[in-house]
Amino acid sequence: MALFSPTGGLVYHLRARRHRERLWLPFRRAVAAWLAEALPPGEELILVGPSAGHCLPSEHLARFERLLLLEPDAVARFLFRRRLGSIPISHMTDDLLVSPLLSGAPGLDALLQARPTARVLFCNLLGQLQLDSSDEQHTGWRDAFQRRILPELRGRRWASFHDRWSLDRAASEPPLPLELRFARAPSDDELGASLFGAAGPPVAVLDHGTASLFPEAAPHRYFTWQLTADALHVVEAVSG
Image 1 (cartoon, rainbow, N blue to C red):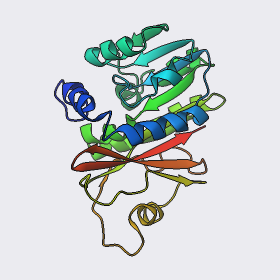
Image 2: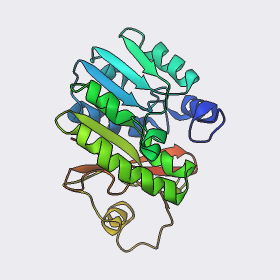
Image 3: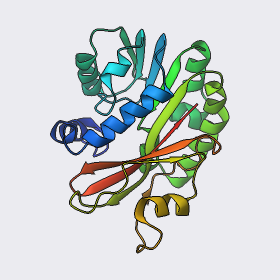
Image 4: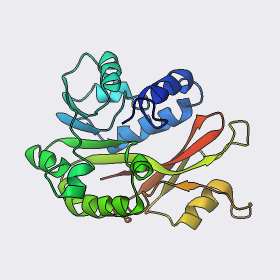
């Protein structure tokens, strides 16, 4: 990830420092409450793309016996360790999620096979992958993820929260629902009507390519996250 990428690196860490205790606080609390239900503590938790854990509840993570970070950003790993330095934390910097799935090489699936009891959390990462790849690459990655990674999640506790949509929306506008719950994955129209109202004008959103990535029959939650004063993300949360 580029050092000054708007989706990570120093830009993201500086944004978190500025907004995490104000604009981000409702979203962070909603994620913490969801994770307390979706991902009970166990021996080992694999965190895929946690960055510095700016949106993760440190109190909950500290209840695991050990953490394995799959995080290439050295600054993020340093900040993460500073926040949770009291429990064993190891890390891997190799890309196990994208390149191996596109090339057919062993990747995250091999790591999960070697750790059959570890729990897994995809940390607001999967919705960013489309931004750094072509349509063809992202389609190939989705197919490989569903074919190779989803089977390795069966029989273990796992969770993912990831961008579904993003849009230009000022924090001063009337608030949208902080959290929505669905018994299964909603259609775009259902989600849009629940967020913006069925009778409202059309809303332009950036689709992050995560719809139907996970089983549609699983319960789905959606959180609204005011990322900056002018930008809002709709984050999808799924667990099994």
